[in-house]
Image (tube, rainbow, N blue to C red):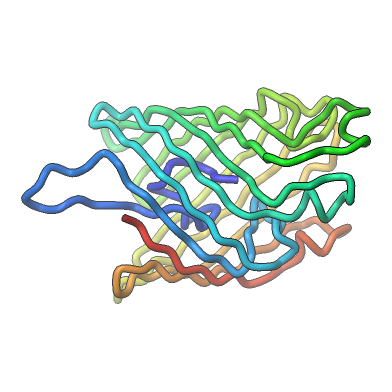
Length: 239
């Protein structure tokens, strides 16, 4: 579940990276990213039953501030929860506009989560699918960032959950030697379900053209191992 455009992902979901063009040539508006993570955590919940995930995507960023992209990851949470479901892939399609107003950066867009596969009787009976459309607004200032997400459709298969919200506060600090300290706290306000808080703290460093990450993830959810505390390792590459 890709959280924003590629410029901010490692600080929040561990999927996409910043990119830069050559000093002499005009910077290309296209980029790609590829990541391997020891566990795919989304808003504190493992999407892969605490197993590794291979992730990657493509982005287009126009000089005007418009951007669009595609991202995908292997997942198992749907098929793990029901033998009536055949799904192993999450895809994200997103587009938006980003810019600056003085010292404040802003980012507004739409994100469609789609899970290709077959869905059995339980899903047919409820007419619910996990596919979800969210809108988001992000703000940033120096080392701080905040993002608000709103579900225009039912959220990941929960009945009557449209209007659910997610609040994401993050911070990023350069602590020297090319090491970045990242911190995040999020709050999920899900209609008809228990609300919860998740958080993350970790380090990342670029070396040899790759980005290496080590992050601690946890939530205040007590009824599932998928939201327990754990450490996630990642290695990413942008092109």
